[in-house]
Amino acid sequence: MIQLTQVHKSLGGQEILRGIDLHIREGESVVLMGPSGAGKSVILRHIVGLLSPDKGEVKVEGRPIQRLDRNELSALRKDMGYLFQHAALINWLNVFENVALPLRECTNFKEKEIREKVGKVLEQVRLLEAINKFPSQLSGGMQKRVGLARALVTEPRIILYDEPEAGLDPEMTTDILHLLNRLKQEIKPTTLTVTHSLDCATKLGDRIAVFEQGRILLDAPLPEVLASNHPRVRSLLGIAQ
Ligand SMILES: Nc1ncnc2c1ncn2[C@@H]1O[C@H](COP(=O)(O)OP(=O)(O)OP(=O)(O)O)[C@@H](O)[C@H]1O
Ligand SMILES: [Mg+2]
Image (cartoon, rainbow, N blue to C red; front, side, top):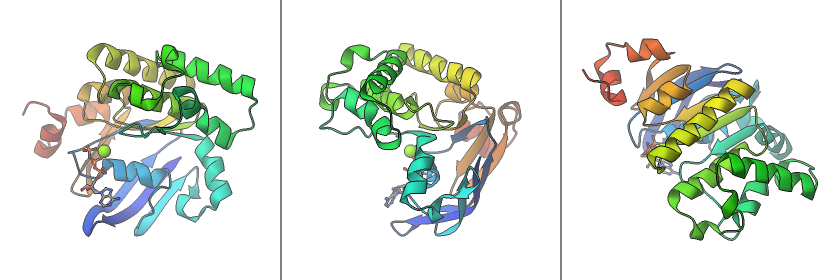
C-alpha cells in the first residue's frame, strides 16, 4: 500500500534520510517514532508527494508518487488523509470551509452532501460549535482537531497522522485516541502515525518503526519493540533501561 525503498533526501545541505525502507501493507497501522528534528515529518511529506526523494522510490497503492501527473496525484490524494503537524489551516477560510476543502477539490459532492459530511466529522472531533469561526479564533488544540477533521472528511483509505495528540489536553487526547482507535477497528484504514507518545503508539500501532539519524533502527510488531534490548530504542521510546 505504502512502500519506501532506499529513500535518500538532503535538505538545507543536511542529509536527513539515508536509505529509508518502509513497507506498510493494506489495513496495517504503523507508528513512526524518533527524536525531534530527525526527519519524521519529512518522511510523511514524501508519501503525500510534497517532497521527492533525491534517490530511491516512494510508491502508494503500487504507483510511484513522484512520477504521477497532477490529475493522478489529485485522484490519489482523495484516498489519502494527512493531518499536518501544525494543522496548516487556511487563515482566511472558516472552519467549515477548511474542512470542506478536500471535498470541493477532489469530489463532485453537492453542497448539501458537503454540509452533511463536514457536520458529521466536526461532531466526531467535538468542534461543531466552532463551525463558523476562523483559525485565528481557535486555540492550538482546536486547530489541530480541525486539521484532523479535514484529514478524515473524504473517508480516506490511507491516513497519515503527524503527532495527533500534540497540543491537546489529557481529556481531549483520550477522546481523540479513542476516535482514531474506533476508525481503526471499523474502517481499517492503512495508517502511518508519527508520535512522541508511547501511550499513543501502543493504542494505535500494530507495528512500530524507530527512526534516528536518517535510518530505521528497528521496525517490528509492538510487543517486540516494547521488549527490545536495544539501548537506543529503549531510550528513544522513553522505556526505563
Ligand atoms: N524544507 C526544508 N528545508 C530545509 N530543511 C528542512 C526542510 N524541512 C525540514 N528540514 C529539516 O529536516 C530536519 C527534519 O525535519 P522534520 O520536520 O522532519 O523533523 P521531525 O522528525 O518531524 O521533528 P519533530 O519531532 O520535532 O516534529 C530538520 O533538521 C529540519 O530543519
Ligand atoms: Mg515533525
